[in-house]
Length: 354
Image 1 (tube, rainbow, N blue to C red):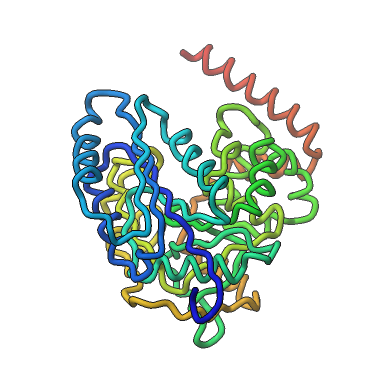
Image 2 (cartoon, helix red, strand yellow; image 1 turned 135 degrees about the vertical axis):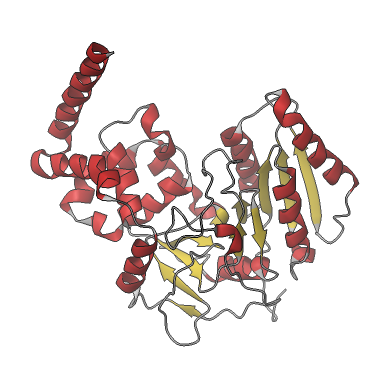
């Protein structure tokens, strides 16, 4: 009970393997959360696929075997006896949560949480549980000066989210999951162009989506699983929303070259590709006052602010813009044929040159 009414206390799902320093930092920050006592925590500890991962894996084993986790309502570790790989390891946790809970929080293992992260997630997951247009609650917020109604502590938007502490509802899972995993989202590229849904995307999302829109094979694997790359595009394609805090509840340390997807960033620039995420300011308050801005009146202002931060060069955008123009001019079916011919000729030329 919270303030005399029921509320969801979402479990936290943490897939991990060997990044012991990151994982321990995450767990210690989660312990400091004021709502840790209400929270069940599930760790999916994968088995090392090679000897080089064993030391870090063993350090995590020692930590979870001998650490004190009594601050949580429940602490469970699924130790894999074979290597699952990151996707299967994460999926197993989600399937378990789907069967046992009305909602959950999934996070990468390389983050640090604010003391009010759990309270933020739980309050938002409760408040928007019956809203069919709000699909996710993102604990991470980019280092952008957001515009919102005075006093707002979070806002609704449809152009970004992050896997660094993301809240889900079981009742809404199949809606986005089937749309993405079936490939339907990519097959909707013609509609996305015709109806101008792409205008909801920031440039990096536009690049990821349209670079993959004409090829559904292994090149588009991130669009056939529910990664944050796919979920970000889903928001635009289906006009759905995510709740985001004005000040981030999460700091990321994963841009050190240790992760599967994030590359190493060694500079202290002002844009997404050179920003030092490990120094980002996050909320230090122990409590969260739920004061949302659901008005959407600043949507375009905030989208452009994030677009300026998450800048992509013209050269980087070139393949996506080419595919976009093909779809716009010829329609999706003929554009796929043209793209296939272009790809075939490029491969033949590459073989000839080599």
